[in-house]
Length: 520
Image (cartoon, rainbow, N blue to C red; front, side, top):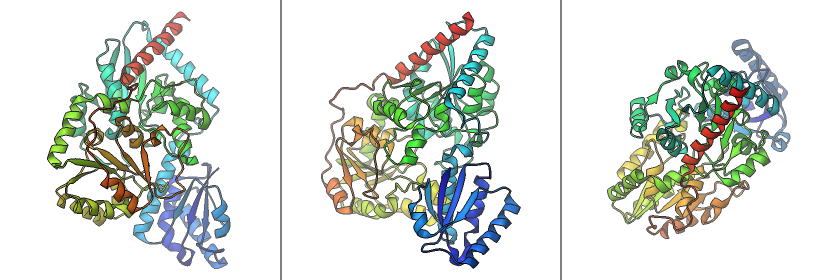
């Protein structure tokens, strides 16, 4: 059972209607979700609890079946093991954020996937069913093992391109592969949006045409392997019949190349990154780090027989993309400063990892008083949409205007973080997978810690050379000490060739399966 705690305004019960309505829209009686409501202190009065019951009944009559809900004392609520704690303020702006957090919880739960009962089944039975579907498909195909393997890379957010960049390059250049890239629509708008024409041009520059969902629908019978970097793509946020789950059920082999290395030790985050329903569907999972393989063993329910670590595709790109390196030098020239720092603020979401609200003013203030330092601001692609959806338009406008006014500050809301990372001598960041990627450049990193309670998981080689910052004085000291960085790392570069190794493994393993199916 997944428990969500709502700190509720029992002094004005109906002021929280929008949040309760959102909960009923996201979850129903069949979902393993329980809402626990409490006041800020003590137990709400009988009249308030009765009014809540009336409101709950009205919402059920309007919206349909509801998840489990109960009211407890504040002390009991504080001791519960919960998936998320969300404050319902009764204020429209504050509750817009609460609704966003509920939506984030819903998207992260398998129950939000639609048809998820099958996904919650035993992993061994799921694997048997997928193996049987793949074998039937391979036997019907009439294909020879020496035929090119037909691969599609499916994206929903172009910002995760680095997770597949060298895979695409290797597959594009291989005579043993026929490759296409498909962009799925993002109806939620939770990520920074870019016009499809710009995304198509970006992908075309890498030698691959960008396909749309209907193109894929017409060619599903020809497909062998689907590569996905985003484990949250699902039935609920893709066109009917085209979710990775449905494609896998049809016998296509599903490969997960995760866009992020998990850094957090938060139990919920660990489950999302290592034991999501998607992990049970994957035929091959190419881990983003060597330590991630051990994390899949510790925290996943699907085992590690299908997990491989062949190097990090994202780190390979930082080491090998010469075009991005040239663009990075152009960025430094435009800033015109000897030193450049990249600031990577995280979105709030439901895990409270962001220091943006507290540190935006000190960081921009430092840049204003130190014109010899260039500041590249690269917000997480969910940060600005989160503010906009919460009704905080003026905050976003003020922030963008402040960055625009400072000649040594550049706000980067482009599709790709690679250029900004290569341009920077050091990075200042909330807890983000970009830290583990930037670490390969052997440049200083400052981790902005929102609380001393912030936990890391066991895969923590990225902590070497990372400075943990708890307060503004420590941040100021870090920025004072930034110096121009060497252009190339001095150590061994085991990530080079990761994309090619992944493609070779997919082709070899799929052809072996096809040969076995043909022999039956």
